[in-house]
Picture 1 (tube, rainbow, N blue to C red):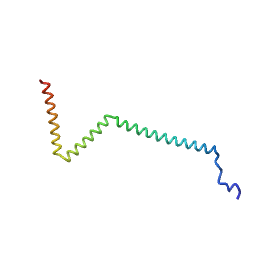
Picture 2 (cartoon, rainbow, N blue to C red):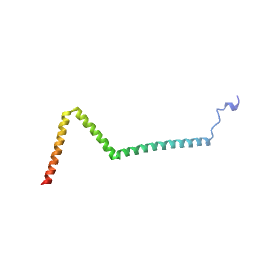
Picture 3 (tube, one colour):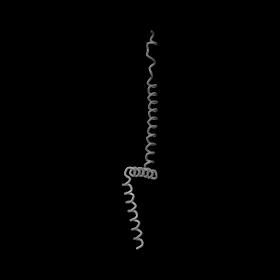
Picture 4 (tube, rainbow, N blue to C red):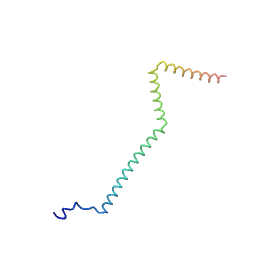
Length: 103
């Protein structure tokens, strides 16, 4: 065995180690910036959805329709009574407004 074969391999120089560390830091920075961009885009999308009034009105309307349909399916008599009550209140309100305008 010679001294050349006994050595575990060439030792990396300090300059090579610094270059590897610098490159690793660049890769880490690139990955971190990509993650930050993705999180920022996700936040902007969430804000856009939250602040989009027509979309929110549509979502709430659909939710209310589903609740009313479920209520009508589960308790049809109570749904009819509630509908009659709403119609009566609106009718009385219109009647009072028209009557006050005619006087």
